[in-house]
Length: 146
Image 1 (spheres, rainbow, N blue to C red):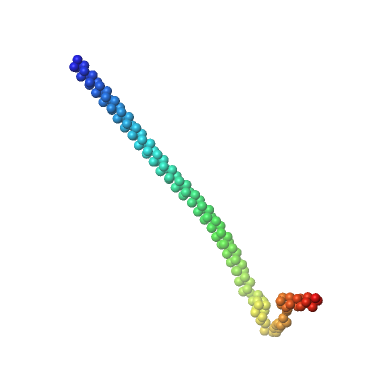
Image 2 (cartoon, rainbow, N blue to C red):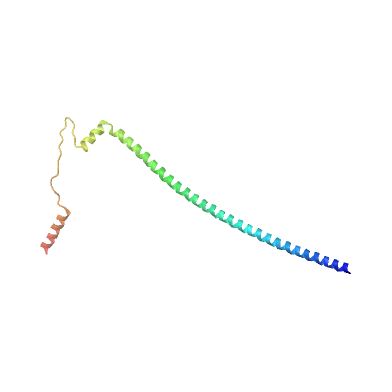
């Protein structure tokens, strides 16, 4: 009987140790699952943060591209205007370098005359009545009529 009791005690000890082992294994697996869940959550948050950063970077780059294209268009317009003005100035240089055009400028703008010519300048010395004088005369006429 003592052997039976010893075997029973042995069996009970084995079952208890088996149950303890099973309980410890279950607890360990729960802890492992929690850790894995925490790691997955942490990685998900990190990846979302990275996606947000990439999204902001893309938006900023697109806005810079649009701004640079607008600047390029305005610079091209300024360049085209400058080239057109340059062409106009070159044609003016060709035109003014001729003696006939130089004589015309001298006669009209600088009041010069040729060797065999006499220059006559007529100045208008008469003053034209100003607007205030006209208003005063008009006002006096009204008073006289009344």
